[in-house]
Length: 594
Image 1 (cartoon, rainbow, N blue to C red):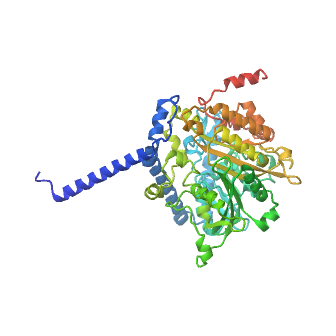
Image 2 (cartoon, rainbow, N blue to C red):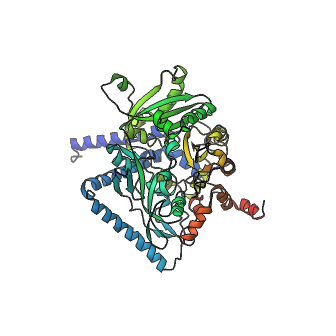
Image 3 (cartoon, helix red, strand yellow):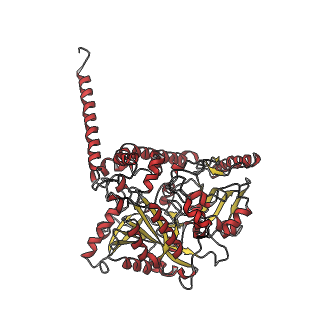
């Protein structure tokens, strides 16, 4: 004992205090995350029920810190690029050309080796925003492309930005916002890539005016299946240009995309309008969303969104860019930087306006706030919309926000790393992530159907302008029905209705028939001229998928550019991986003509 000093005892005591503190915090986490209801049905595999019981601990102590470390790595990487490496525009383009040649070399070698397998990117599927854990890449030839993650050019004269496909929204806002610029369609989730938006789906709350992200693309730089480098514009090759969106890399490899930018201000004024029936919400969206461009310029807003907290109550949010003078008492009184980590999650804050609206005449006294524009752009990143509540039930508690909130949310992609096949399959029947882009006139019916199918709230609702490219003589995978267009215009107004969370019936300890319900949603969407979003699980048969999306132009381009043995089809790229749902009966009935 003579070797034990006072300093040793103090160190040992400190370590024991830390140990007891960690045990106490862990116990608190487990207690705070306990299930309020009957728990998961015993029909779920024991592995899934066990994972669900300890999911919160896993997320808090592992996934959130790892997500923060990855975020920090990317921030440091981008800072070093900005300040040390990429000041010289010539060197930026030389670096891009070198990376592109490396990609071309892989494709040319694949051709010389006899095109034995179809090509896919080597990016692991867990790193994608898709809900699928499996990649459907098992028998594919992998092409390395994740190093294409550089911003190449910002052209203030043309008002365009050129980026490699793996550049994400966080990188873009970090670069553009200080310059009072933004993408014309600036998607809010920071980890979504510009390549995914260009070749897949990109939409935002100003899409009621600008349309989907694809409408803002000026040029695609691609490598074909033969290894040819091409710049594709509407003028140079309209067929390929309009076939590209939603094709999910089944036509070529994207190596850069040039998209339009807009001028912005550093602050946004948000107007909150509570509605107390779904029809009222639909009418309010129509009032602002179906304006002509000239009317929107004169009246605003630049963004329209609604959050539904049950099948009746919602808050419509209208946003406009504005200036902010902190010396003005009136403006200072409504200033609210909503995205600081210690603040309540945005969707929780918005919900308070339902009750506030019952007590004020918000037509005469608008309920408004001013917030920094970057806070507005990424207002749902901290809470992954509202999914965080199912993952970490106490995440909105001040204690959690202050101690852990500064690290941000768990990355969606990392969540899949902890799923085995059994857990992945069970999660499809315990959790819903589904969206339907439906005609605005079907919004009220859609909400009622979503309430019946899923019983998940909040619901995301925002309007989107969909152009009729078929009428323009071009074509597209999305072909709107004529009756859904606004008379006298070449577009109509659709709404994206999104449900994310645990179905009500699952919370009651019962079984939820995901296959039947999702297929009902898909068939209803096809019938009314709506579209499902491909990153979610879809249970279409191949024939149903072709009825849902117009493949005429797509098939023509696939054949023209020698893609048939080079890339999997759109359906193969986005279908739910094998083992999740059995469609053999449905496919057999199709073959019999039933």
